[in-house]
Image 1 (cartoon, protein in one colour):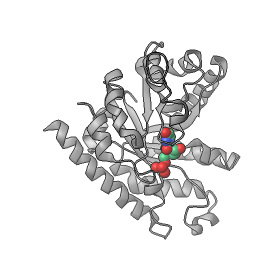
Image 2: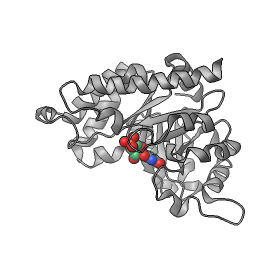
Image 3: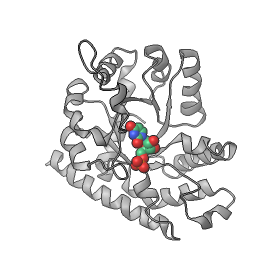
Length: 274
Ligand SMILES: O=c1ccn([C@@H]2O[C@H](COP(=O)(O)O)[C@@H](O)[C@H]2O)c(=O)[nH]1
């Protein structure tokens, strides 16, 4: 999916919500555990109940890898289900990959070609040749970790270099890479006050913003500092939506949580269209 098509979906659905599919056998309703594929059953129920209110889903690959082959099968079934039932939905593999170029190319093939995700998150630490293999893919996005939502982001990302903070250097440098128009960036909602500075460097790129919900980030602050005239935001919430309840109507309650966030987003979108 292109950025333009994603923006069209955002205005159509009045939502820039991304629902995180961080599916954990220990957190889902226990009655699902007797199903043949509990991870897929849970994901399907969440997707069916929330798809009206969001434009993207972001399975975090760690949750699938953690349960081995069954996890990979459930991930594949989930992405195939999205492609067949809701092809207008944007998909993000939150995999945080990146390696020497030869290996990065294999990661890119796995997530873009085999699984068919629209985008993947990558770590910038290994530099240009570790990211460019991902950027070669047409109509696919590579989402670079810029300023993450966790406390440890301050260990390295905000270190002063001779001319700028490290995370800003990462963003600036990435703009020189081949096919850099295919880049998006991760900026944590818990770091919303940094967004105006970030927008000075990348006024137009999409930002994937995790951290609203369980991590306490504010949607209003993210919009105030990070929203562009074309929106330019995908705001993710995982646990607060998918584990809103562990009763038999968990999906309905997740749907209500997603709808509540979508309504706040519709108000924010009014501000840029009126
Ligand atoms: O900076 C980052 C980068 C990625 N994440 C991921 O997003 C979700 C957030 O989940 P919540 O339950 O809404 O807190 C999760 O998959 C993280 O690994 C992030 O939080 N921060």
